Image 1 (cartoon, rainbow, N blue to C red):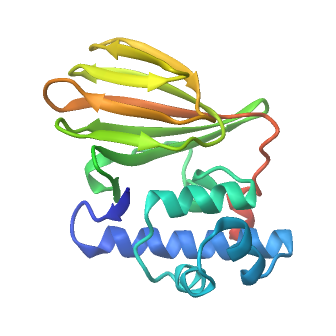
Image 2 (cartoon, one colour; image 1 turned 180 degrees about the vertical axis):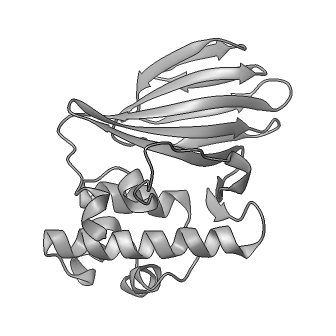
Image 3 (cartoon, one colour; image 1 turned 90 degrees about the horizontal axis):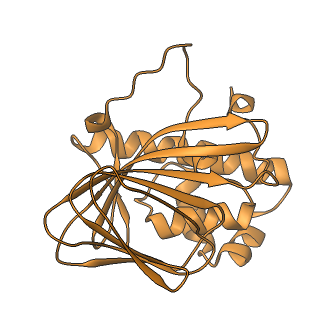
Length: 204
């Protein structure tokens, strides 16, 4: 299970919760659905959703992906704010971390193009455990920066070293495992063109 934790104290987690709450409420209002209906679609308790919309709580990545699937929008449309400049510098160490059994994720950037929507993550895979995913929309692109990584996807195992690249459709179950020491990698999540989230600018 992946849970949001602060990189440097509680400030990042509170900030991430505030952004998630505002985006979740806006997306729900845009689609005209009630908290009860969103609870039914996502399998998340209504009380938990109310807490999230108020900016409270500490959501797991499973919760965020369930909301993303229930609303039909990319994860980044729930987690990111609009950039305020034509030049964007992101310090990974200053971002909140989504941590799980073996994976630490920091979302660096959301990129919207006419044909696709992309999310870029700083990803670390810790040795000693396996991270499982039940699947989600989109295609995952992985570039290993250091270490040796085993990814099981589409019923096949793939071992990657520094500089290697792997892409696969992420709709079915898949898993990640660091084979030796800590693996550092970049994850790019590409959403299909039929995913059309409400522009984040509409919140401001």
